[in-house]
Image 1 (spheres, rainbow, N blue to C red):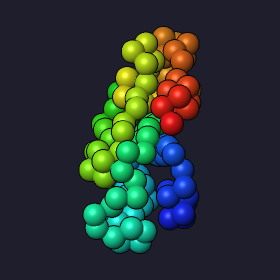
Image 2 (cartoon, rainbow, N blue to C red):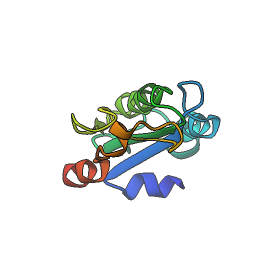
Image 3 (tube, helix red, strand yellow):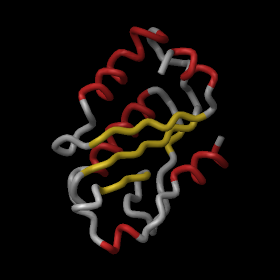
Length: 122
């Protein structure tokens, strides 16, 4: 992702694999450096853009919601509008997936609706 991509896009979907209920170090580094590398302070260029998050994990309770919430924290701190998943999805806060070896059959049949949520919001 280059700074221009963040500027022209109406909505931004960010995601990460889950490591101990946290986003990956590369994802965190990207968020930590976006101010200095792209915009300066305050970050006005992302204000009122749509933000959505997704996460993948090895187990059902691997911390996907916590990882998605970390992305939401970034979105809110730069005044973005946060969209999440639907009530009946596997993750209410955004889209998530569990590795097939650890995924219960009840999660496998649930929709992951982030795309339909992000599109109309922009």
